[in-house]
Image (cartoon, rainbow, N blue to C red; front, side, top):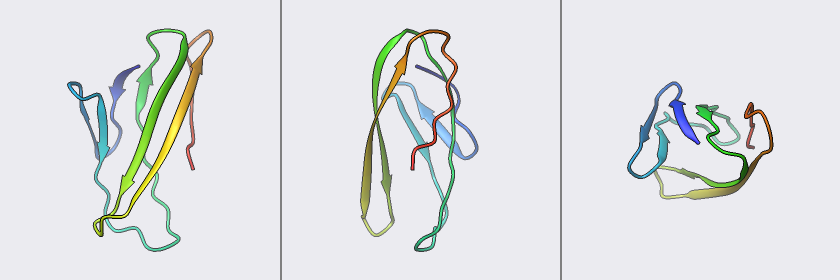
Length: 79
């Protein structure tokens, strides 16, 4: 994938292929939405990892897979 827009408050490091969003405080049970626009450069199965880290050191990780099988148009919501 090619990152075409890292979204609001997002930055992209092409060297490490890392998208980072810096968020303010999110209360317990609260939600925060982030997004980016990516362009699929090839068909096939693509692996990724989403990691959230809190200021207290808590970490949550979600492994993802996106299958691009034709026209590369996609919208993903990861819980």
